[in-house]
Image 1 (cartoon, rainbow, N blue to C red):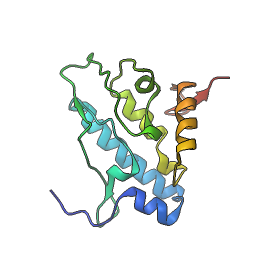
Image 2 (cartoon, rainbow, N blue to C red):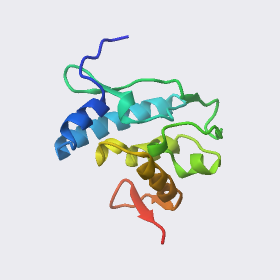
Image 3 (tube, one colour):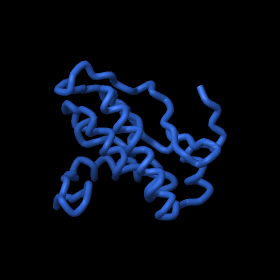
Length: 150
């Protein structure tokens, strides 16, 4: 394993509170590439969070901690395990419905480093409730958008 001396994303969030747009774009692009690679190889990551994103000496990201990863045998296979970090759980996971690689995409769009530095238990409960009321859909204008149901 390579030595990554750039720290984890959570450390940088705590120190800087919010990243610049350019820095956020770089991190998102690199995380998306990593997830695409995993998904192309039949792996669902299932625990995307700032603590599991390490930075190398040049500031590039690496995913770590594959303890909750799921290796799928085929594309149509779904998982029902309730696992992950509360701030990043997809609605399918919270509901106990079957899910696939889409849970990683949900974790990315709800990813705490995009907007928040810290969560307490009240925010976690509110976020889980909000996730159950949200719907993700693709449009031609944007890659992903979130529409909250009233």
